[in-house]
Length: 368
Image (cartoon, rainbow, N blue to C red):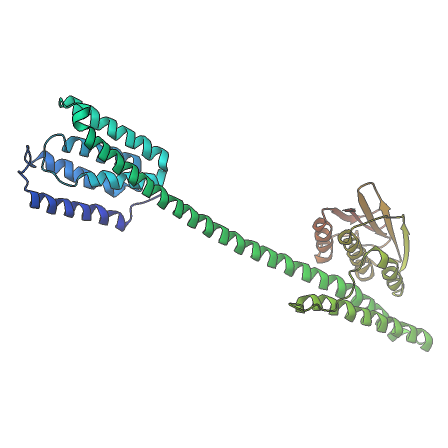
């Protein structure tokens, strides 16, 4: 709610001081009627009303208009009391718009005519004064409307700037989340495989089996570095193109499943002809399968995992089920929330929870 400010008292005080000086110069008894007492009452009323011009612009127009209509026809000394009404009209235009201001102008001119007829003067006698008053009021309305338009333009510009800043902050937050998700998907899966293979090499006494596990560690770490370099390369590029790895998709799923098998986990892959799938949906499917396999290796204690792709008319269904104990005391962590965000990012859905034998992740992703 608007409240009176200290500046709201300055203009009425200044106008009243000017009117007092004007009355002293022309003489308080120079008119057909002396200023005391009602001339002063109307003057004080017109100036005092200006204090609330921002809060109650229409009421102030009515009060100052009545004060002017009663002052001048009564024959009081000729002063600039009408300026209080012009100021009120200007404020009404700026605050409420030109429609109310024009209606107030019509009402004031009509009131001036009515008062003149009540005094016995004809429209012809007051025609010049009416024309001058009408022109002044219309000019004030035009000035107020121009100021109102400029104020609205400034407000729109400030709102647009705030919107741009909010959009920039939102985009920054989304990009940080995307980068964190990419790094999590890349590192969690590969580091888990490296950890499993390193543990196997440590506990195997047969040199050939240990060397095989170390070879898998080398391959997994190399691929991790490639993908990590690709993610960081996107962050580094500014004006020049950075060399980044291709975006993984459905075509890379067999390699992903093969690497997961090196950890000792049996992974069966069944899939239909998925047809044309957008790059975004393919990347989401790849990352969801990658994270699901990572969870199987790290948490479920599963011995077998089934990865199934099914093509529906408008969506690609990705399902990963295992025979582990991941459904016992199920609690959602960063990995599952990241998979949900992956699916939601392309307009799809994801459900995860206890399955027929162990744990099941099922995602439906729009193909386009």
